[in-house]
Image (cartoon, rainbow, N blue to C red; front, side, top):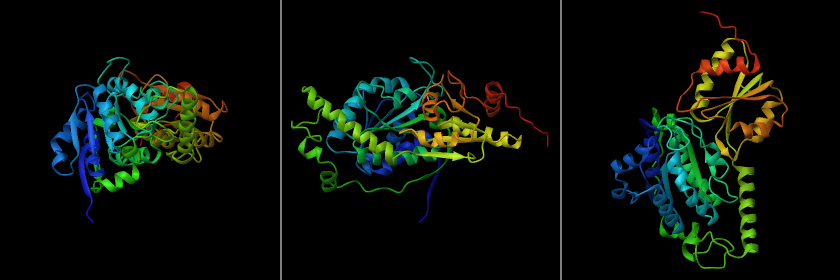
Length: 367
């Protein structure tokens, strides 16, 4: 079978993957740097080929509530936005989590706070992994570092969302959304039949989320005792996700004296820094979290056992570093390197951070 290989932006790859996965509906609103998701879907016109609904809502608030309605009917639905737009969606995302409905949210991050800049950032880590809305809920959060993963994570994110009946988010930074790379697009999945929807999505027929007595999909529970039981059920689901769905990649960590922990585009920059460090005689490895939640605490704890220090590299003021410090239990020093405001560093800046933070010297030679 011939592979369908294209050269495209990360945002475009998301749109193509959504159609091929068999997404039933996309509801979104344009905002830089992710507007190409909606624009590409409009150009593809999947309503003529797969029956997929593509609708530009009047706002991000409208789009997330349309997602809520579509998910309540058993459909595979998604939205995409960038940082300020996702902030507006937080109430709806919290409602989806409390109603135990599957949905996929794409966040192609830009710098903030506020409207900030249209340039890339990773400063929505807290918002995505700690629950940006109210209440004790979690999102499954996937962090792509390539255009290929932008495409792959559409299907993975939606599959996980349906499996655990909780929203999932693809948390990409603007670099990954806007960069162009070769991508192998997935095969076209057939749309689910009505019988499959009835079997997979009983709430769409009964209107009842698990253990709810009222015949309505809702996040509201006026009885405090019942609401506590609902929350206890959510927490059991989250523990199951933590036990089964942690994903990460480790490069050159087995013999490393120092470890970099980075995700998204920063992980790519740091991979080049690792190559240059090893050429200069310093053993550095990198661990890249793929799931930012559930977070790979155990994997980081394990690589820290033989390391002298960890550098957490992010395009923010220091957010993921809190989880890395929890993982290592103060067993070794954990330092942060980051740029803000949409500035993307180069590998040399990462190596300079090792000198500044840990006093590491690099013996570069001219070939």
